[in-house]
Amino acid sequence: PITQKKVVSIGADRAQTAASLLGNTLVLNAGDSLATVDPTTGLGCRTALESSEYFETALDDLSQGKPRDLIQHNYTYAAERLISSNHAASKRLRRLYRPDALS
Image (cartoon, rainbow, N blue to C red; front, side):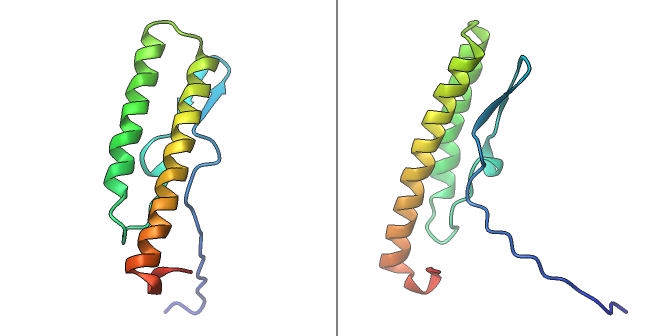
């Protein structure tokens, strides 16, 4: 039998950074590793679709030989704007329709 247990609560809503350069390697966070959205608001799919456009743009820019630091900057800027906007929308929706889900 289990005699000890530990409950860990981790509040995660966005990555520390959307993109990083490790040497000459460009690392892009995408999907749930980039951001999570409250499932009660229905914005998860919207976030995924919009962020996938930024991911595709970054890959296109990379294939065109654009500087990695510029791609990193553009991807981070776009992702941060999207996440901030969708988190604000999520809070508005929860306040309106699910005040019980607010913490």
